[in-house]
Amino acid sequence: VARIALGMQQKLYLGNLSAKRDWGHAKDFVRAMYLILQQEKPEDFVIATGVTTMVKDFVKLAFEEAGIEIEFKGEGLDEKGIVVSCRNAEHMIAPGTVVVQVDPAYFRPTEVDLLLGNPAKAKQKLGWEPE
Image (tube, rainbow, N blue to C red):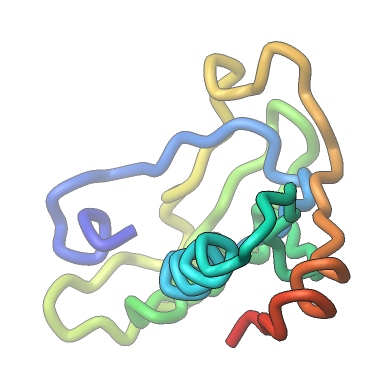
C-alpha cells in the first residue's frame, strides 16, 4: 500500500479477500512470549487477539492510512479494490483506478476462511492482554 501511495507500484495482488483472520501486533506477541518464558513449568499457549477482521477490511484500513479511500466490487476471482477518492498529497490516484486485484497464486493450498485463536489461557495464566 505504501508503494502504491508513493507511486512506486500500480496494484496490490492478494488471494482470498473474504478470509477472516485474527490479526495481532508483534509487540503484544513478543510480550506474551516473554511472559511464557518466565513460567516455572513449560506449557503451550495460544497467543491471539480473539477478534477477526476480513482481509478486504484490513486492506481498506491500510489504504485509508495512506489517504486513499477504496471500495471493493465484484466477487471471488473478479473482485477488485477501486479508488473512490485520494487525499494523498505525494501521489494523487484518479478515482476508478484499480489498486487491488485477486491473484489465484496467492490462495493457500488448503484455504481456510476463518482463522481465530482463543487466548483465554494466556489471559488467565499469564495476565496477558493484547493492547
